Amino acid sequence: MKIKLIAIGKTDEKYLQDGFAKYLDRLKHYISFELVVINDVKIGSKPNTLLQKEKEAELFFDKIQPNDFVVLLDENGKSFTSVAFADYVQKRMNASTDVVFLIGGPFGFSDKIYQRANDKISLSKMTFSHQMIRLFFVEQVYRAFTIIKGEKYHHV
Image (cartoon, rainbow, N blue to C red; front, side, top):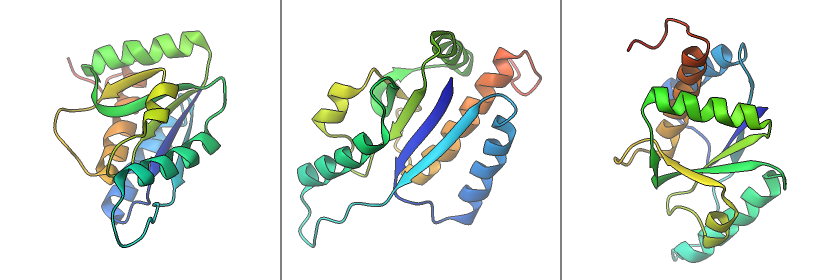
């Protein structure tokens, strides 16, 4: 199994880049993890959220394989504790399919992406910047693997 995180837009803040790199480095001991960054979609001076989501969907579909298990990081998705998320990751590992997590653009996902998705999870009921979510997500994936392996990182 491989985990891929596909996100719209680059991370500008160095502290977020450094944090992400820290957990990405730790994760390599457990699983193959790949970050794919899709450039921001520029529609023009007049915002058209539907068109933007459709253009982003095309870019997502270019990076998703037919057999991938696609999970949207979405405010209306299932919420987990860290231990329950570790169980979710373990079940996905047992299924032996690559898992692709998507972080949408500023207006969310198109209907086409929702239709393609196999699941939706929420990291919080709060709204965070797309840049911060990357760091929070990779830390939770790392935490999940330490829970699965019975290591000391997660304190119950």
